[in-house]
Image 1 (cartoon, rainbow, N blue to C red):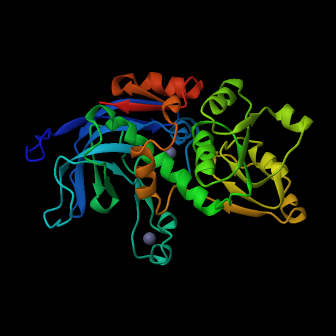
Image 2 (image 1 turned 90 degrees about the horizontal axis):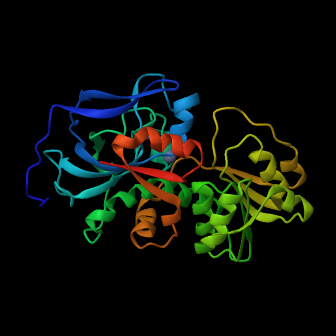
Length: 344
Ligand SMILES: [Zn+2]
Ligand SMILES: [Zn+2]
């Protein structure tokens, strides 16, 4: 569509909504009305995240138990912009959407820690997201996909949000070239973290993963040297930076075991239930434990990494039509795919 062609917007649209735990369904809902500072967006594609699987079955710290349109890894086309908007974006532009809605005014926002905003809302987690035909978002949350991106590959830009979360975590970990990085868990995020560690210059990157299939993918894309847990136990090695990219019940304990003395542990994976770990290992080894939540100031970098194909991501994604969303959830739950990306 040319940028000058007005887009006709229907009154109602389809949205895939979480009604209650384990109750997800398509509903007809009104197309949302943009507020004064918001754009109306037509969804092109939206990735399915492990967080959506948690939300479906067990909820999430963001969710307020109200019916919610899921989806926070959003690629969309701009349908309308605020009347007083004077920036560079135009109707018809393709954008990726930072799903974090912040107040800009609280203690944390004023200090640049936007992802910790006291009034934070999150598209697809606390307010309606991208598993729908349309959504609204503040203009400041939009990042333009370069015009050079071919139309048939726009759906791949749904990767920018999850890559941005890893870029943010990697900046906090800040591995140096002489340091060893270990990744706990080689799901989608672990595979991305392993590749980012290489981009950061780390010479040695290894990973612990239960699944032989996931270890094989890491080997194949050259992301990390993968080990099964018993292989590691037979020949323990340690790392200066350890990233929990699993969010499994025992991942925290593995992080503390794998960390070298004076090492850094990044808590990135999440599960709704508390975990048990040998807390005093932090004292004994003088570890630094770093939490990393969503993303902060990482979007330009992540967009560039995806646009320039700097990461081997093709083995990690699978396109699905939105009408096949139940199958996408089932395939993700059964670990038949790393990341489904839904397309209209
Ligand atoms: Zn996510
Ligand atoms: Zn704030």
